Length: 226
Image 1 (cartoon, rainbow, N blue to C red):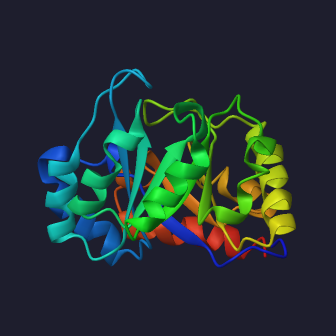
Image 2: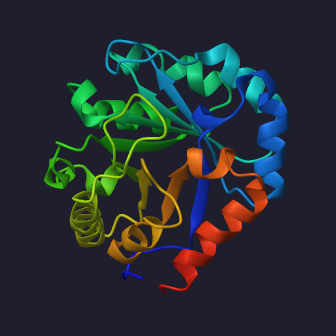
């Protein structure tokens, strides 16, 4: 565990859930100990896929008991942030690559009462956050190229997580450090050791015959590395 690292948090991504039974699947992972519910919002422009908008987030909010972690993989996120917070987002993250004025966007999210995060695509270096690290509530490092669930983990992400952890610790920000993409029983230990504390897992949880056991194993894999 790195100096600024918090306890393990697991955030199942509903991108891999059964959209015909979202309430059931969300209840299952919450019973299994999920800390957050991760909601991937895609627009078919910033990423090559289309998922959900504020009305679905509002519906999820009615059944979820855990905070909603809304990840905006969209162009012009500033136009939609307020609608997602009003729909029930407790956390909102935007991509560094999608906003021209990241400082303003992050502070707008906070002003609305949500926690604010910045997301780094695989090709974006951690140093891109150096001048705003102290303003962030969390950072999300993408360990796959965003757009689809079930992709293979990019191994170079481990070093990037370590660099992001050093940057956040140097800023004394207290920000959480998330990793999203290819997180499973075989990859989670390495990124935990590198300094991540929050893990977005979709396929590894929702495709398991027992989501509760899958969540417990992910958490155990980190605790054994502590």
